[in-house]
Image 1: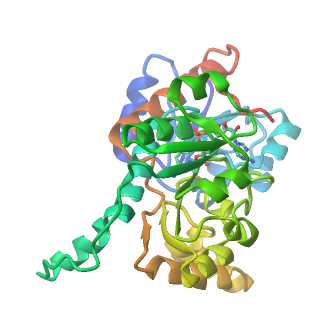
Image 2 (image 1 turned 45 degrees about the vertical axis):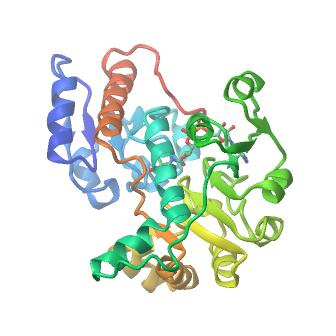
Amino acid sequence: MAKIVFFETQDWEKEYLERKLDGSGHAPVFYLCRLQDAKPEEFADADAISVFIYSQVSREIIAKLPNLKLVATRSTGFDHIDLQACKERGIHVANVPTYGENTVAEHTFALILNLSRNVHKSYLRTLQSNFKIEDLRGFDLKGKTLGVIGAGHIGQHVIKIAKGFGMHVLAYDPYPNQFIADILHFSYATLDEIYAGSDIITLHVPLTGQTEHLIDAAAIARMKDGVIIINTARGGVIDTDALYEGLASGKIKGAGLDVIEDEKLVMEEAQLRKASEEKKGWKTLYEDLAILKMPNVVFTPHNAFNSQEALERILDTTAENLKHCVISGKECINHVKL
Ligand code: NAI
């Protein structure tokens, strides 16, 4: 019987997964905490672990799990997993490639519409019984150009929605798919063409060595004055320094952020304490906090994936990943290329 250990699972997820894995002859173990906050000696015999993005699957933890055959992340992104360490040990990594293309794309438009129609400012104003509309004038999306960087699952869904609003779309992806471009009526462009031609730029790339700080000061300098930037991908894709300067100078008119570099420092006291001890990350933290207070910034706390339907799809796929890779011993599915 394989030992499967889940981390970061709430009660309803535990019940859902138990139902999904019922009849498999396996009794999974559940932790509410993150992997790094649990005691490895309690699950040293794990054959598979399943984590969400706040667990760091580090080389050190992997070394403490000699039987480990599978890391099943309940996310699309896998930058929280040491892939090299998994590869060296022959451990499979499986993700959930497509649970949330509509979910994250819908959230992308929640951020865009907040900024285009000043919804966040209206909300704060009316809470104070102020119903004046001065300074609340927005702009139409119809006829504007949306630049989509990363036209994969989420990016393509964003394009579909943008077309519904009557927007023009330019997209950049190292692996263009002309068939999809013809069906969805958008054009591929270079990054420079996107920077020069887009009123709104939205990011849908994974965080990799190539995409880290893809949006830096040089990229922002090439964008239209008054551009709006939306990031639901990963915080590290934008250089915080450059974003701060761009917003402060007015070059960037607004930003809709579901993610921000070093967001763990902003959102978790424990991470803040660790950074304080290691004396690092302070400049980013200062800039993060300053950015979040700017009136032309809408921030959601890495919440784009968080719809009931998307969460159930994540658990369904994770259960299938586990069934294939460790329970039935069939070929692994949804495995990340190592
Ligand atoms: P995907 O793998 O379907 O699409 C990513 C696209 O980016 C691919 O088409 C790929 O060719 C392209 N790409 C890779 N390197 C690039 C580069 N240097 N420049 C431009 N394009 C590049 O992934 P999907 O499902 O669309 O998700 C994208 C990202 O969104 C994930 O990697 C994850 O980090 C993030 N995400 C965020 C969520 C949230 O809650 N905020 C939820 C789900 C995903």
